[in-house]
Amino acid sequence: MEIKMLEIHHHRNGIAGEPFYVGFLEDDDSGKKLFIHFNDDSNETGEWANPRTAILDTSKIADNDVRFGSNSFRGDHYSDFIKSEIDKLNN
Image (cartoon, rainbow, N blue to C red; front, top):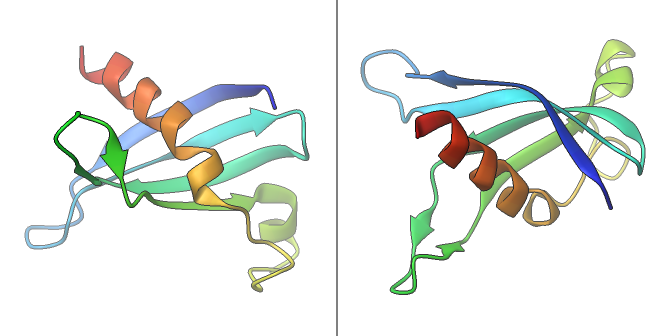
């Protein structure tokens, strides 16, 4: 699967919430998607474990569809790509 980052931004989530990244990406699977990515815990090797990434199809959001199974994608399939884009953003 080929993924392309369209836009990415960091949000501080108020003064007490956990910060996160949000943006748009596009893949050859089903088009444009919104992602929300909260920082993960990394293990001793520096690899990210337990990804906390939500992926939603933007066309389905426009139709008010946020149902599980209909507009839900495996965040772990996208989290490594998103993490690499976050690293580029912060370096």
